[in-house]
Image (cartoon, rainbow, N blue to C red; front, side, top):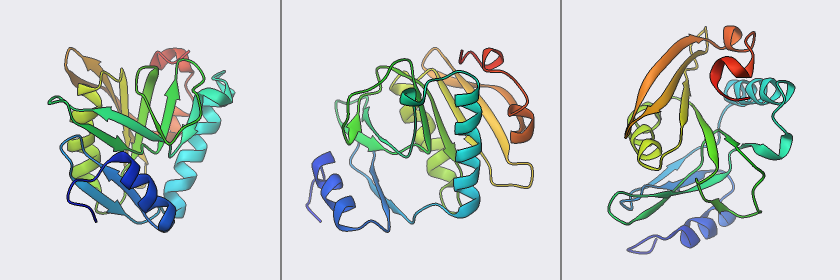
Length: 175
């Protein structure tokens, strides 16, 4: 691994190792995680279908796409949220800008709790992403919805995924 890892380096590592997900913080901290499990994938799929049925065009929703995360000190990181919703379609690329992102969703896997609930929350807020949802893999599949309030997120609601799926997008400022 190079002494200083760039997004291009991460792209090359992911191409050489399809069994892991590679991310880097804006400060240069590399994290390597195994691929998500079945329950994780089903949660992401259910949420993606709900978003599409609610009227968000398919070209504005994506699972596991790379985002270019600007850091507070000029660094650039690369994160791969479990789900992203944009305000308009994006150009193809490995590391997309966050300018048009409306929502990022992280589904917490065993071992990713700290990164998903603390580190990424701070990075996404600093990047100005309006909404950040965290979904636990507990029996209720608890969703905590955060909205950007100034420079940090404030929890707006917490509910089981089944309840979210029985609401409409307007209730979550996503229409």
